[in-house]
Amino acid sequence: MATGNAGKKQTQYRILRLLRAEETLTRQDIAQQLCLSMPTTLQNTNELLEYGLLQECGAMESTGGRRARKLVLNENAALGLGIDIALHHVEVVITNLRGKVMIQDTLPLTFRDENAWYQTFQRGLDAFLCEHAVETERILGAGLSFPGIIDGASETILRSHIFQLEHVSLDRFKKSVMFPLAAANDANCACFAELARERETYLFVSLNESVGGAYMVQGKLQSGDHWQAGEIGHMLLIPGGKTCYCGKCGCADAYLSPKVLQAKGQSLEQFFQQVNGGDMQACAVWDTYLEHLAILLTNLRMLYDVDILIGGAVGTYIKPYMQQLEEKAAKYDCFARDIDYMYPCKRRMHAFAAGASMLAIERYGIHVLDDERLMKLRKES
Image (cartoon, rainbow, N blue to C red; front, side, top):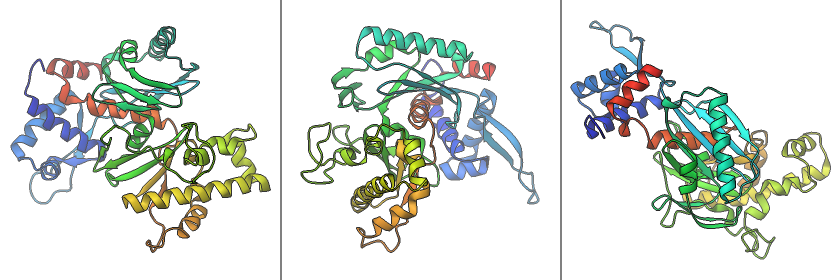
């Protein structure tokens, strides 16, 4: 760090992280919740106000003395870039500090681990930033969502069944993106996008192109000993059942991928239109799907004993069918009085890319910025 104290920057980032989860807080609230002294809180909040990362937004009701001023995060003071690599396209988003998507676009690129693809990707990303007049000086960092197991220590894609890759360095992506890059499994990114102060420990189930999951404990993603925690798509669901793309028979992915609902070539939207219209065949397929999902989720509940959030492509449609799912789950969970631990995801759109952006903001936040860059942010905001 060029100037300033690393400990002070870390304290300031803790303040920003707290206010990212809260609407408004007084300095007294901040000191109490972060166990800081009032002089330390005053010094750091005043600097954050000077940088333009916090704003004052009125005062509390008077209790006889000087009214305490309320502080709020200036959520648009800096930005994050999120990138989601899918099989046939790349989604790119710009988010503010709270993870709200400000700009979104899709690049029609079928992934190939070849130099030509990375060059095309870089040109597309540069064109996106230029077309939308993004102020690149305000971007703290970029996040990459990728459907595979990523070793965060060696920055390597260990394995991706979808893309048939093994032991691929992230260097090519890093060279294609002009910002500091944080990469994570796509389900981990979507899981991070669901993080909220009222729920910091939960299991995220991603019913997407490939079925996956992620485990959040007190606001921190759990990666496991080999970076593959949450690979629930390859848990055995039906012994000797359908062949999964991984080569095993009976994996959850073979029964819960959106492809199961699209066997006739229709889109998910068209499938659920058929279900809602009472199409008997579609309703039977959906009923069987929910049965398999109930088995998986109740098994996961037994293992983790935490709330379970359902996301991914199917998760965006599941809210109206939660009662049906819970009724099926009740047959398999004899320990719970009520099936009150399953929830549809809150972020239905851009979850992977937005979550990647939020991961980048988390990693490349104020605690890694020097005073010169912070003052530049203030001028740009």
